[in-house]
Image 1 (cartoon, one colour):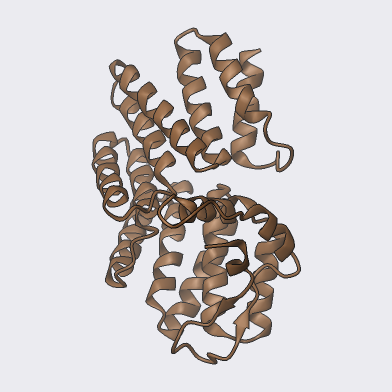
Image 2 (cartoon, rainbow, N blue to C red):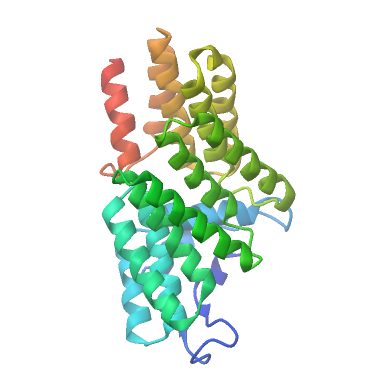
Length: 292
């Protein structure tokens, strides 16, 4: 898959108005194309890297324009896609309200039009948003509903991601064992399908749950964080690398390894030159300040 394949999004075969297409991201396409680079021949992991770079390389302006363009062409399938991707994008940035608003809009439209895949793509970020607002049980039920709908479409690419959100939700209920079981399923899907784009986060979360389970699991958790960083580096996924580095630095801080923690985290944080208002970069900066 090359950057040029991102420049237009043909309507799904059989979708209403199949002659239409929405060029998601225009006029930001050149910027997105610069970010989404080809990474080698089939089988070398380029699709995983591209999937990560599309998410990381997108901006609030690009996402908003994608939704606006889909609305302008009055093409329900494209609008469902744009709203669902917007929900995913805001979940990735940990923006609860925006994720929920776009997810609910996607669910409403996709339900009316009969697009089960976009119902799933909206239901799971909505469930995550509910969990973040203290409605853990309702959120978990929504995520399960989305996963069931998604499995019925025979799609697999996003299942590790969705399962990770379910595991996180279980963690908020103080159920690390359940979270670890869900992550095991997610990692099995990764190994079976090769859909590795969310793999770094799966290993980072595994480390988090091991620590939540017992402080005696520190060695295993550290191994998970190192593995998460290594997988992120292989994918050129700096945002996943930052999350893993932050988790590892926080562990080292608790063990009195302040210099090692600061040096590790600074080496990743200093790579970024923009978007310092995002939750992940704010979290990393707060930890760096605490380590001074």
